[in-house]
Image (tube, rainbow, N blue to C red; front, side, top):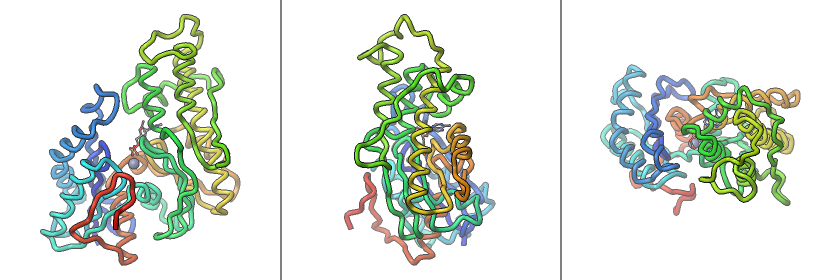
Length: 341
Ligand code: KG4
Ligand code: ZN
């Protein structure tokens, strides 16, 4: 069966075609970084308008690249939670109208559950149970994926997401958005030990994350104690931006790796998968590979499957359909991930 997957949960308009269960035939994304750059973050109204303008085109491109027509589709999977409500509604409306026109099943997918399962597209032998670290611009969490219908949250951030932190530090260093790749590139030639930025722990919750402290520590390091974002750098700054970027990146990576390995040990799994935009980070991949104990396989999806994409939605949707789950045409959206009914 061919499944179309659509994701418009944040600022990427994404569509993909999957031959169930795991073969990705196309994976198209239209990003919106240029539209939001001047505002220092994603503007919900601009995002939903851009999705509305692009979604049909991106779907057509996904079908074209896969070499199929609408009539070949067997089902449609669409992200309906969590995300920006106005953005989610555009994808869900497109999915509903196609499902209705073609007379094929529709299934609403949880965006984070899809990030957890994305690695399956490239790792044929990957199966439940496994552990998933999902780190993106909006989320940082660890899930114990026991089975297709048993995805349990083990720990999450109590404040900023890891990707959000990269994006804010990029602004401080005068780098373009998205911040993750630009900070990471600058960090390549920096000294990870130049500055000791904090690796925060959360009291009574060893698997929780807190990233607001490291972000503030970078700000104060650059501007001086209590320094404001728009203040000039302190006069006695004797460390290069490359070193600041590398030291910051190492601090975030150390925390992500430490929590993931602890959770894997607690859950007793032999597979750890990573997902979300931050999972594309080279240092994260290198440190995880280096520190993972024998017996724990770390699955690294390619960057296109880490960032927001339609393939992971199609894959997760196909899995749900196999379990007999499908949505009605009154499928609702939810900002938080919880559905009212
Ligand atoms: O999963 P994603 O595409 O969208 C969200 O759901 O947020 O993740 C985007 C986030 C951004 O914060 C971006 O800066 C971060 O992932 N990111 C990275 C890297 N590539 C993207 N962070 C660190 N290192 C990277 N190489
Ligand atoms: Zn995402």
